[in-house]
Image 1 (spheres, rainbow, N blue to C red):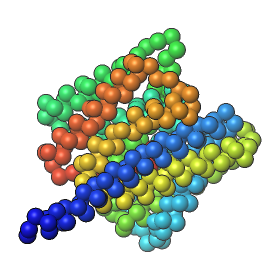
Image 2 (cartoon, rainbow, N blue to C red):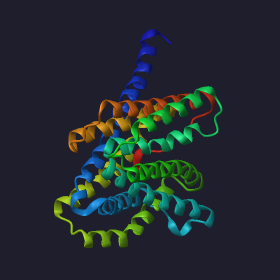
Image 3 (cartoon, rainbow, N blue to C red):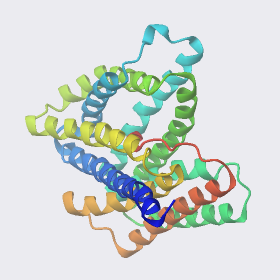
Image 4 (cartoon, helix red, strand yellow):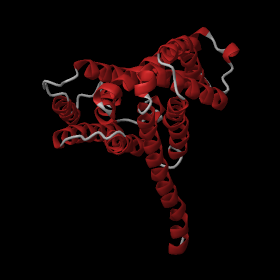
Length: 303
């Protein structure tokens, strides 16, 4: 193969990588913008009302996209799907409650401890231990005790992290036992059903305005449908480990969008904490990639 032929063959790969990066960045921006837009409706319908509408929108989108054949599911398929539905329901409520109490950047940063814990679990390498220490230092800096420290907000942020870890592990099981995205779609639809009575109660207690409903629905689209599609397309163009490392930008993107849309102003110490956790997550993904075949990372629609 001559030089020109090799050059032409390499061009599509370079183009795919560029397109993959653009898709990942677009997915991250959509995900965190959706969360910020949803937060604008908190004063009217509260986090529960926003999450309910978000789950309804996401459930419908996933149901249409996945078209799960529910009647054909076996008991062996149903239990991880039901568990995943419970994780969906709990994760989004805990995350949005944390956003309401802590702000977008800190809440998303705490949530990212979930995938980090999964990446670090079971590894005994010194680098992995260093990542754990680095992440722990970031958490200490981010949650440092102050007169205004919101320990409930920190607690629900950590609950969101635990749910995301559970989502990753359950998603692997669901993916292995169901076809395509049928299992995830079924879990999303069931989670939406769970929020029907919860959402009705929340919206009766806090009557919505058209603007609040629009913000919550936009959160469902921007934080679920758009990043889900972007991540699936990106994973066809970039290596799985590169995708995993790039996901680490989400806390940074969240803090930046929180500053722009919500008027949040993270201090220098907060940015340091976010940086420590982001670096720990990125390094842990790279270490795992060098020691074992990487599993396809879960799309960011979990958050």
